[in-house]
Length: 103
Image (cartoon, rainbow, N blue to C red):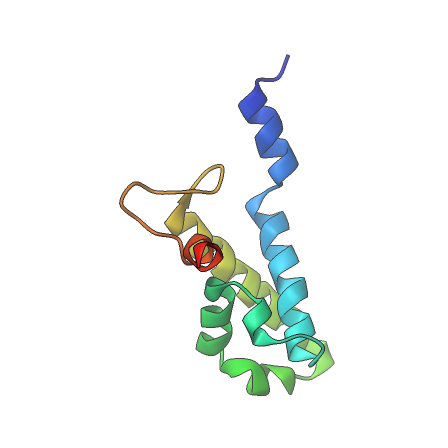
């Protein structure tokens, strides 16, 4: 019988699942159908590091999957560094997405 924590982890999905969902949101921003403000602060920061919305929005479609892979890997690494499993901040560490929701 699975433990409750195991069920919660299964329902939450993997870090890869989450980074894919964030990329889907970022892609809507790049296409102009959503505002960059709709993204969490980590995603906004990564888009800036990668050249910004304008530059990435001009990426040719055949190269977009490489941009997506780079974005998702950066997001997974950044999230892993700032959160422990289950999405709770490390003790003494504030997560920007959580702080953004509190405001």
